Image (cartoon, rainbow over all chains, first blue to last red; front, side):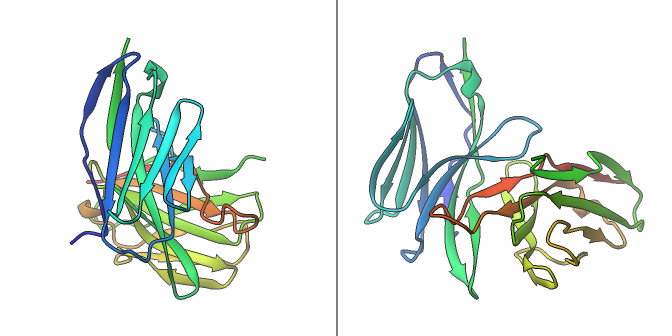
Length: 113
Length: 115
């Protein structure tokens, strides 16, 4: 079983739609949960960062963590063409005293005007 | 701050050639990482470093080498390039201060093709 599973999409929605992006993970010891956004031909950049179960909101973005189900989600309200990018979930684990991230494969999102 | 910079942006290598991908950060981060990203496959960790003089293998280290002589620089060496090393390579550094201990800052990437 892979440590992190993410549906690669692609996902295409009309402008203004609500977008739901999801990942599942296998190890209950994972502590921190992140969403990165990667525009075409660019490096990933941190979008959302959560630690505990529940919701965290930042503008049009909401990150949700359900540790009991090992499930994390990113919701985008009123999606815009500028949200078109690949979204990667990332989860941290601690190994040997240093922390590394495990990334999902990424979901490519296109928001059509 | 320039953040994380990588050179070159693009490179084409012939099978068996060698090259060094350069990575520099000006944020005084101790932790640095090298990833490769293949289409639809996410980011795979190649090597990482927790400080000058300290490096360790990641998930896919075969065919690569690293060194870390300064806090700022973390070059990645490819010896005897193979077509399987065709990929986009990202360098990242990590801010270990404050509460967001997992924030990684990525460079713009190096697109490498091995023919």
